[in-house]
Length: 88
Image 1 (cartoon, helix red, strand yellow):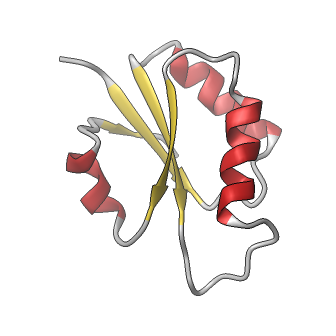
Image 2 (cartoon, one colour):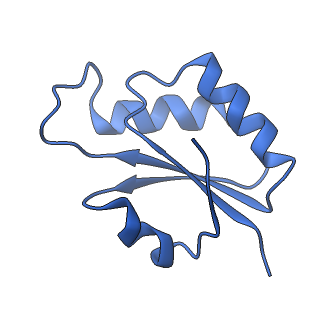
């Protein structure tokens, strides 16, 4: 079974702490999905596309990283991406 971790968050902005966690997770999981959450109740500093671009740029040298958008409930993303671990 492939070990897939989902790291959900608004990532506004994506910090060095976030990057450190992702770097360590790539050593433990076959795939790490960074789920950028859409929250209509928040007024983010960066747009969704800017946040995703910052994450992709920050993680460009890391293996097995995927950046996705998460809308709605987190629990709905778990089967969608075949996730078996959450990073927090």
